[in-house]
Image 1 (cartoon, helix red, strand yellow):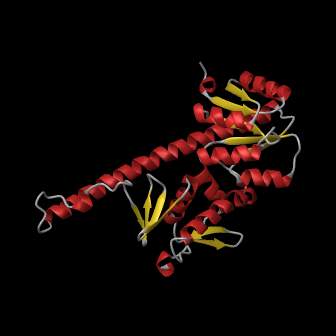
Image 2 (cartoon, one colour):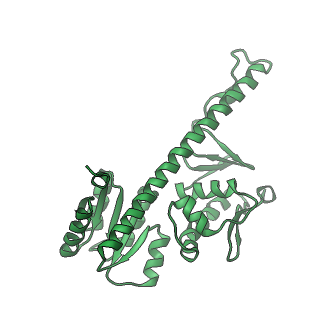
Image 3 (cartoon, one colour):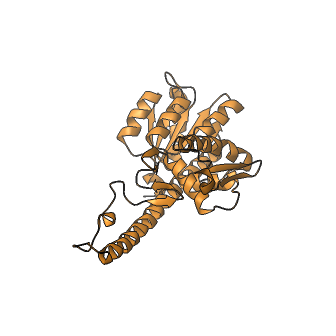
Length: 279
């Protein structure tokens, strides 16, 4: 069995002829395809099964493909979705990319273009999973080291009868990453300041961590999309993709206090602001 035969695609198209034709083309390439005619059916199958990638027509009966994309991203921010359309419109393409679409294909789609787009989408999904596993491993190592250091310090402190103080015990939200006065919780994608806390999407959380890891320099949007979203694109498209994530991150962090965490360097990209100056 080839690797492609293990890859599951969800194809959403209200036109039976188009759906059949695309499904057969994808099956001939070697993928396992599940077909549905509507966004509602797609959401049900997406919730019930584990798909590697979704291909969705924008013009669907009932909910549109863009509404479907939005709801899929709410359920699974790392889901890879390719949008399909017969009517090309730059505004629609930009909106799809802003909502997190991996690609935007115009029908009729050449087999080579379809194969290339799906292959890139699958690689992006694998890259995101690898990055999640690596981040999880790093977080576990940091948490274990912090636990050992705290346990030793508490054991040496006066009045610690069992040798382990309360601070060495696990936080209910898991390990914590300190970013100035902010506390970041990778397990739940939360950020807290004092008694207040906010919840970020995985993309927003990874964006904040990447900017923090490279503080002191301006990071191009193309680099942010590659490292945070997991795929390559040109700088102009990358700006459209990353801008809504930056906007949402700024708005959420602002609710904790007067923090200007993400600074814009016009026509260049973004950088992490001086957190100390924001307190």
